[in-house]
Image 1: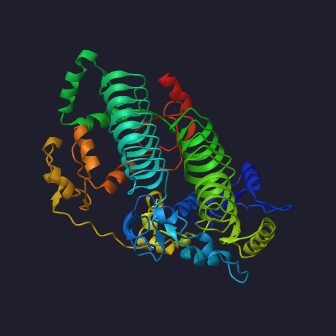
Image 2 (image 1 turned 30 degrees about the vertical axis):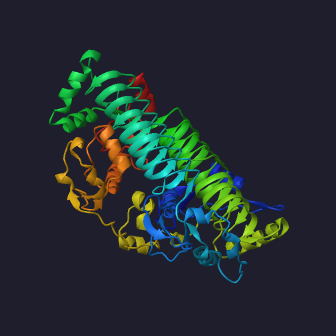
Image 3 (image 1 turned 90 degrees about the horizontal axis):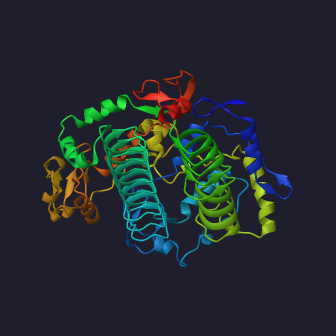
Length: 553
């Protein structure tokens, strides 16, 4: 079956296996199954709408609506929400049930949900089982981290996005099971690396691109199982340090590594240890169609940045085991549909920010709850009788089984990850019915602001007073500060103070990654037609998987 997206008009395919999936996850009440119809939006537009509800790293100074104490929040002060600090939100001093309401069959579902959702208090940050992470969002089991978004099981990490199970990482993007790394992108099981990307199982090296199982390598590209290499040339161990010092003084060092990259063979899609998968950055998975940044996933389609998902479609940003779920973001456990931020949940539909709960429909900010609709408690029998009636009403209004409309997002489009993967200007944001604001958080007062160009090059010449200053970014001209934990890291590793604002550094790392798109092209060796995240006009030499494996091994 072919369909045209009702938003962008792009054609997309619905396969027989897709229809089987929609039927499999469709909820059942009594003897009746309420089948999920095929989507009306293409996969890209579905993803864009879903992640427009996700503010990862825009944080603001605000006050707790209950205690009026200062706090850091993902909700900007120009939003008219009641926002509680985490400590108060998790306490017994209030209850989500206080905002329960009955469904009004004379009004639309989404209209009622919008009114209800705006009233229910929200939590300032999503952090669990963590310590000293006041300036990080969406964290779990982490300690002593600063401005790390998507911060899972980490310790002593700073300025990162999607960093999982790692320690002592600064300026990391999609870092997994690594330690003691700086300015690294897409690294898996690394130790003591600097300025590296797209590599795995490497140690004690710097400026590696697409390397595996390498140690003591410097400015190298596409090396496998090598030790003591500089510019892809073997150096005897006894002379390595001498050659390394000479190499660091080369004036055109970036040009030299760029020339190496031009002769660099890459596999059409980046993945490791998979069976029957398509797309990019997939590890230890099988039977995945159109997935991106996945680990240990199976039998799924249209997944983005997930781990341990089985039989799921259209889900994003979730590092915990999940099964039979659809069109949701940040979720964990079983049969979660059209929802956001559901942890340890079962059979939860059209809900936001609920924890340790089951059998919820259209709920927001509930914990340890079951058989609730719009935060109102029902018996099992009442719940299973009322939900089908609401679904029939939604079907009549053409609201049945689509994710929430974009304008219900509690965030401005330009502060969400949707703005990063699907950039739009102000006019486009408004015309496409996303939310927009020009609010800018005021910068903290400091003793003085110093231009990045005036910073001493040697970290030993940086005074302790820099902690009281701000640095003017050499690109954006926006000021940014250095914290003590960060300064200690730079001094320990003899690294210079950054000259660019953290947002600029993050943006530059994102540009190093391939886009979340597949292109038609030919293998540069066998000339067979292939799908790849490398466009035809890229300078890399792109091989299909078969030709690549023969070349490497």
